[in-house]
Image 1: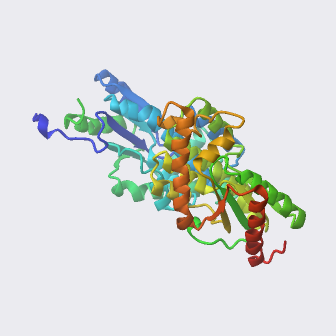
Image 2: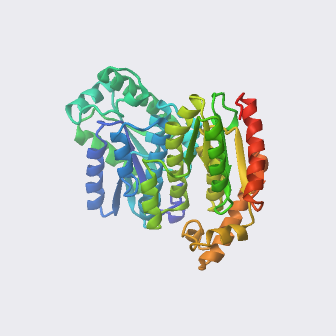
Length: 226
Length: 223
């Protein structure tokens, strides 16, 4: 392969940035773990960074959420702080070191959630304009009915995930359905704009994983990373 | 967004700005005593004091863990929380809200840390536009003299995170000099009212009360 024709990441770092998006219950973490195992066997250095895990801020978010105290802008800014902290202390250093970084959720999560919570699209996008552009964004797409079953069957309904803080309905189940449907609509709007690699989240785990590996392999074969 | 237009809430929002040692806290405290004695419905709020995040920010500052952007975001979280929990409800209920530091503090400090001016202005776009923003101006030497009568400049207030100088006093002068410069630019941009912070406490307070009286009269509040 001609080295000079090598594809270069828009973010400019030697590493590779792959974001996995989708609502709760879409199977993101299962797929990320499987991707990591495979990439490690292939001999790549891999780092996973999950939404809301910065050492500095994650605890403050949980405490505030427990008290149901968060208004829309505070909510947005807390998550943006978490993101900025992880980006500067975890994600960017790994990209500089040439690693493959898999992120469980990325800025698109904020774009959809915060717009549903009433923030303007322009405001939230400008807020995150410092984020490097991923080389690949997987969107695990799921119909809302299936999501509902998965979430109720596992973790149960959560106050914020049900959008109860924005007063959609006093019925928990109804509120959840309305909220998740709004989130899905926002994701759909972004599919084209951000060139999401949309994958069918209703597929069996293995089938979904092999589809994702195929896409990652294509990217690796393009010579984007050493 | 809200910051770029006048609010139509019944209350009155008065903010004081300026570097540390500019005398703004002394002045707002005197203003508060006076207003409480005449109109009663007064609420006071200060920078970085919200319950949900100020502890986190303090901890992070102690460990020098903050990059300028995270620093900026954490202060915005604090501000958003106080705005939504304290300031907006009080304005809706017709209170006079006195704020010791407001969004202009972030604009001055964060930009002095090389954060993009349009990014930080966008971030605070949800803030309520104050009825009156008073800016206490002092030269950086006076700020330093007043701060250091009882202690040395602290790490972040001296901008030590920016590696401007190894000497905290020298670093303070460079960094706070930048902050003053940013404030000066905002006099025009946001219509900040400049008060000479080198004047005597009494003279400043007399000036202040005159300005505040006019603003309150426009809202039909007699003092």
